Amino acid sequence: MKNTHTFHIPVMGIGFTIDSPLKVAQYGIDSVISLVDDILLEKLRKMYSEKFEIPYTEITDKIDDFRAKRITSYLNMMSDLVDKKFEALKNASNEKSEALKAYFNMMPSGSAIKEEFHKLTEKGFHVSEIKNWISENLTKGSIDVNIMTKVDKDNYIKGEKLPVEYNDAHAALRGFANSKLQSSVVLSAGMNPRLYAYMGQFDDFYPTEAGTFPKKIILKVSDYRSALIQGKFLAKKGLWVSEYRIESGLNCGGHAFATDGYLLGPVLAEFKEKREELRSSIEAMVNQELENQGRITSKKPLEIKLSAQGGVGTHEEHEFLLNEYKLDSIGWGTPFLLVPEATTVDEKTMNQLVLAKEEDLYLSDISPLGVPFNNLRANTKDLDKEVLINKGRPGSSCPKKFVALNKEFKESGLCTASREYQHLKIKALDTEDLPLKEYEKAFNKITEKSCTCVGLGTSALLAYNLDTKVEGTGVSICPGPNMAYYSKIMSLKNMTDHIYGRDNMISRTDRPNIFIKELYIYIDYLKNKLEDARTAMTAKEEKYLQTFTNNLNEGILYYKSMFNELKGAFQEIKDAVLNELENGEKTLGLISLEIQNLSIENQKNQIAV
Image 1 (spheres, rainbow, N blue to C red):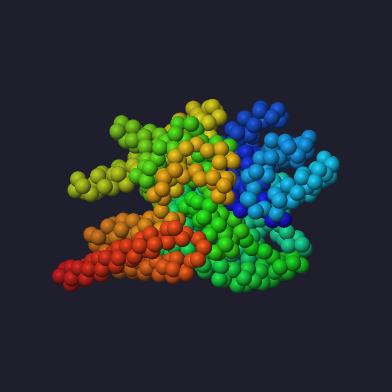
Image 2: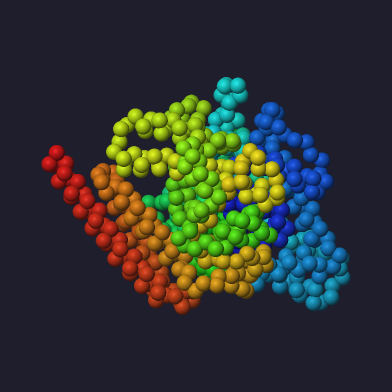
């Protein structure tokens, strides 16, 4: 059945969408829960059990496989509560119930189901007939989950390393696989071969004869090559990717996995062109492997969906992406942080987001994963971090250890934001006898890491007045650059009306087009990389910088051609966009020249030596 909506709410942080399905699924809206923090999930399971009078038995960390069991229990509870809400909506006493009205009012304006419902009610059908129609035609939103594949820490009991299936990501996958949900797991942050192989142990990921899947796989990717490599790897295990979720490398929230200068438009164009090739080539591999395993193969062609997310901000952009690239859904993340009916953000942080401007939103190096991270300046977790640095005790106490992945000093792993790691790293730095400026730069690089695995979940605890004794009250939050253009708290109806063009939630008139914003974020990123390489650029760095520049130039040529040929969309901003593309091209010309000059200078210095 076709989705009710043409948008979905992606995972945001650890806690910001942790209970979003309970808020929006009854309206047919898909959303994604992070499975990083089983401790947080257990706290919310207890809270909701008390609220809805559900029997609750704590799953303590003394129980075998507690992480997977906590996740399964939380997801089962979410499933049950969403089902109850959805059934109540469908069984409302009459077609004028508030929940039912909200369901239809939020749907896209041209929805065939919406129009059919209005015709039915206008004709004065009997309540029982309308109820039957509602039961057959209304769908709830999917309760999807997200696993960051590389956040797969080894676990130990009494100093003894547990088998790999007890690793964090493996346990999270098992928790989802053992749940009653019929939904999707979104795999992000790149390929984890051991985890992908482990998926093959769960029957729910394999197709039925009808080509359906009890549980589906969604891959979050930023380019076609990555999709093809990962899709084929999974296919060799007999596993099918039902959706490729294409995200802008840098114009997004959370961790930013920069491509080598590949921009969203050209990437989506490649997916559109090669969609059937991708589908059919991988389907052949999957079917062959299913036969090898003696499993059922689908009698129908297997389907793939394509979706996009990262920086979408207007109805016009939403519709353009859907129509131009034949996409099935568009992810709207960052703006939903200002929608309490959809996400969970504490009041203080939400007020900071309301006031945030471009200069308050920046690409940082605070993530212990060593990946650029979109950050909100002066968030309370970073302020806590600065207090500890000033006290001469940098680093976090690391109460949860979800990203204790660095094995430089300890085989069991340390988080680079932890006090223990930073103490050891600074101790080693002190022995190097560096000049003051170099020492300060190295010291700052060590201490800038922030405890995000705690900070990204704390907001939910504060929002629900839950205990934060272990975590503290510091909040990390990771909005995309798009947040600068939203400046008020919104209702769910406000937001869906904005997406579907029935209202406008952006008061500013200077918001750049999605493609232009991404281009200039990439140019700034390139400038920073060039600055880092300035002192002694290696041949590898030169090649990377030049490839990055060339790819951006190719992206600009693609956009120039596209905008010149456009007839319907973006007519009001067309000239301004083309002008910005010209300026971007000139800037890249100067950067390319600078790369060449640096290369010549380095060659001269090497000859002189």
